[in-house]
Image (cartoon, rainbow, N blue to C red; front, top):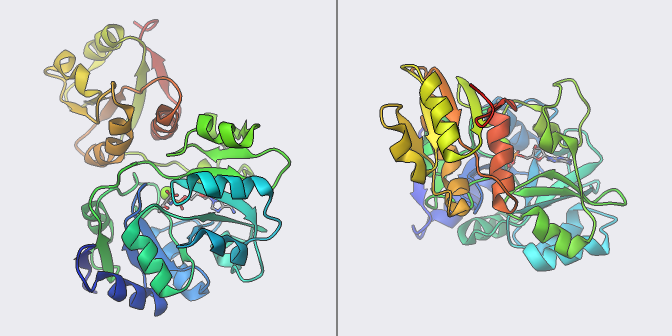
Amino acid sequence: METLVISANDKQCAETAAELLKQGQLVALPTETVYGLGADGLNPEAVAKIFDAKGRPQDNPLILHIADPKDLEKLCHHIPESAWRLVETFWPGPLTMVLPAKEIVPKCTTAGLPTVAVRCPDNEITRQIIALAGVPIAAPSANLSGKPSTTTAQHVLNDHKGNIPMIVDGGACRVGVESTIVDLTEDTPRLLRPGGITPEQLQAVLGELTVDKAVTAQIDKDAVVKAPGMKYKHYAPQCQVVIVSGSREKAAEYIRRHYTSGDRVLCFQEELPLYAGCNPLSYGKEADVATLSAGLFDALRQLDDPSVHKVYARCPVGGGIAYAVQNRLKKAAAFQIIDGEAAV
Ligand code: TXA
Ligand code: MG
């Protein structure tokens, strides 16, 4: 199959994409977070194609994307007042809410769960396509399962060339990490995945927020967890990734001492001079954490190469969007962290 890459600025783009989606085909769509691999979320045959194309485990449910926040009611029941406050504050935007699913949502979309994850993306062309298709669009991150997420049309093409009919090219994704997921089915809202909307922002609207254990620690692959996707190895290049924490100088001292040929250093732009001779790759500026979230997956994809033996990674500290970057990097590193201050 030929994979068409059509610019979001192309006049025919939205109609062509919507037509394919209505026919039950896959279309890769840009969002403000990452590119998604979209299909008609109410059509089980179309949804099955997503699992096939990604090689995605069947027990990992999909997020439904809607063009109009009001459509939430068509997919969910028992929507608490707090959900509408989140909608009001953050939609369209990088926030996904988990709520009890209505009958209309097929079991393959929710992987058999009684709940469904829904979000309204902050991307003009994609909302236009969803509205034209007239159905909620199921869309996981468009990467092959287990690989770093896709933040450009080229990333999607690298993973799916010849296997999907169309990619909508909307340029590089602004946020760069996937949406924040919050579960609103219990008494206290629960953060299942940090992302573009920060825990601080959520707390300001919700008051209370608990953080799911899958956010902060490695989860056994047989464990029962709230967001099934969080237990899988994710976001990772093929080789071992190790985070080295601590001050710039101490971390550089440790990494330079242990670096051997074939290793790479994933660091902040400000640190590049410290790693001359160690094949460093910067993913953004430590002083501007949004550049780190925007650049992380592109960097991890560059490092996903058989010639790379091991990656020493530097991770931003603190809250806000840094919290989401920490989560993705820790998962890429399978939570292997060396304290550069203490290590020899
Ligand atoms: O930013 C995003 O959310 C991107 C773009 C394309 O919208 N999508 C995305 O989808 O990241 P995906 O499939 O890569 O990640 C969805 C996560 C998985 O960890 C999945 O287990 C979880 O959401 N999830 C989906 N439905 C759920 C549900 N009903 N309950 C709990 N977790 C759910
Ligand atoms: Mg994903």
